[in-house]
Every structure is written in structure tokens, then in C-alpha cells.
Length: 335
Image 1 (cartoon, helix red, strand yellow):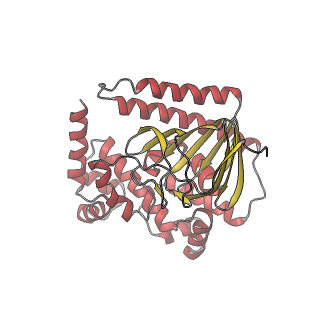
Image 2 (spheres, one colour):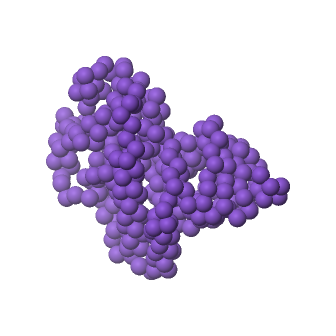
Image 3 (cartoon, one colour):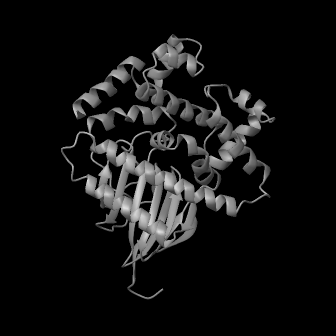
């Protein structure tokens, strides 16, 4: 490695975005969902800050396009799903204690709670970093979530080479987002930008699905086979709020073994997965449909609306009706 061509960042961290009232309100949700972030607020854990250029940020999405300042700080744990595209140069870092080299025209995918340490990069290193909450991932990729889960939670991290066409796609998507930000007075600017990000994720899932088909490993360990089967079963279940034993029975294994497999493959228990998907469905039906609270409660398998209301308030900090009305008020304000 030539002397003077690398900058040392032993323990990199990320700049915390500005807080607003809606982000502060989401803190409670973060706390009761086992620290699997549902909002972009507080997206990392570290003792010090690394100044970064936050190009775009809302409750679910953060886009970073450059580092403004490099300082030594403590190890960082990123609490959101991450997609990093290396535009130029080379970087080295320890990701979950494994040394990784990232080169130009490569993409790095990592799940929430990924640890970064001992960061080195060449002076020409350039990147684009997209950070996404679990909630927006499930909302954007409902029909394709199995592909995402396979990469993020079965493989835990993926570094892929991008073709020239892939790089052009990524650049054009980013440039379109930058262009849309000029529409500061447009009441639907956030929705437009999120639609662009959703399209980019679908393109990424298409690339990953082709890669999986061409490199399918037919000799997976039993646990590696059980976990994606569980995620597929969970995703395709209309009623997700069910006991762990029900899912284990469907997979012909014990509850204890299923929980062990989930923990080993993703760091989360079976119940945490069930809860995360249940909350995503609740959020979707409350915000995106006109179904009554009773209809949603019945549809998602809750015994009665009273139980559903208590469950909802425990996780969202308010009643279902108040939450829906709050979303309606936001739409009116944007309009």
C-alpha cells in the first residue's frame, strides 16, 4: 500500500441527523421493537461523531454522499440497513471483525446493527451510502422481501461487483434524487424521492435474484435452509401474529430449534421477527388502506379490537385511530 495514499480512520462513525418532533416521537417505537430501528433518528451507536454530508434524510431514509472530516473515534454500530456503492478509489475496514476491501464499482449490502472499525481509504475514495429502516424496506419490497432477507440475514453481508450498466443506473438514480430536491415547494417531494428509492431497490433485487440463480449453493447447512424457509413462511402468512410453536410446527421442527436458528442467522429471535413483520403489516393497513380498525384487527388475527388496541399502543405509543388521523393530518399539511 503506497505511503501517503491512504487516510487512516481507525474507528469511523456517522453524523447524527437533526432531530425533529416526529423523529423524537419515534424513539419510543425504537425502544419497544428490540432496537431494530423503525425511524432514521439515532441510526448509529458511537461515542464520537464523524462529520458527513447528509444529502437527504427523512424518517426512513438517509443518503450520504461524502465525508467532510475524518477524526478518530470509537467503534460504530450502524442501526439501519445499508447500501454503499464505491464510486472511485479503495477502502478497507473491519465489518463485524472481518477485514473487508471495497473497490471501485462494488456495492456493499449490510443489515442493521453491523459493526465497523479500523477504517482506511485512498485519497480518491468516493462513495454513495443509502441507509433504510426495516419499516420502509418491508413497505417498498413486500413482493420481493424474500430476496432481500436472503442477502441481509442469511448471508449477513454481501459485496458484489457492479457492471457499467449497474453503475450508470445507480448514478442516474442518485442524480434524479438530487434534481428532485430542488422542488422544495412541491408538497409531494418526499413521496417522489421515496418512489425513486423504491425503484432502485427493485432494480437491486432483480440483480441479486439473477446472481442467486447463477450461484445457488445446493449444499447448505440445515440451519441455513431452515431460516430462509421460516422467513418465506412468515412473509407469506396472512396472519403473522401467531405463536412461535405454530411456525415451528409448519416447518416440522421444535420452537427451541427455530429460535436458535433465527438467532444464529440474524441475531434476532423468532418472536422478534414475528413482531417486526406484524408491525409492518399493521403500519401498512393503517396508513395505506381504508379498512376499519376492526377489519384490520380481524384480518391480522387479533382476538378482538381491544387486544389489538393495546398491542398497537404498546408499540406505536398511541391508539390506532389517533395514529391514522395523525397520518391524515400530515397529508393535509403537505397538500
